[in-house]
Image 1 (tube, rainbow, N blue to C red):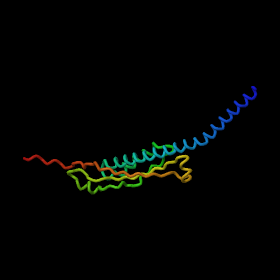
Image 2 (image 1 turned 135 degrees about the horizontal axis):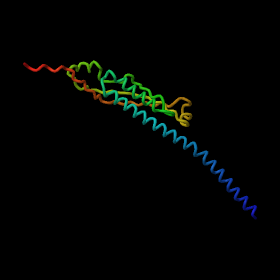
Image 3 (image 1 turned 180 degrees about the vertical axis):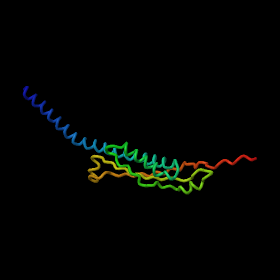
Image 4 (image 1 turned 120 degrees about the vertical axis):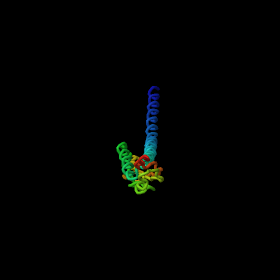
Length: 166
């Protein structure tokens, strides 16, 4: 009688192990796909934020330095990114601006505000684990973002003061 009881308990333990194994085989891929999708969503949000910052920074100074300011933002994003996010690229180089340096120079020597926008487009490579293999093999997923920002630069007044009347 005691032998029969031990056999039933060992069968129940064996059944539990099999059920756990089958459950994990189904659960692990689901968890990995959810993790990959989270990485993709976060990567797209970081790319949008980087693009917005590059457009804002490019629009906040003299038109001749817009490209350098946007490249500095992209360079900083590449230094911060690691692992699954990499290779932030400035697609519009130089940034698309509705204002040229000649228009800014035309406001000299009295200065004035520049009216226009700067448009920046960026791209990021995202390298997830499971989703990448399922869709396109070894190449990273590429996502683009485009942002426009109004120019906030005021050309300084460089006119010499007029002499006081005699």
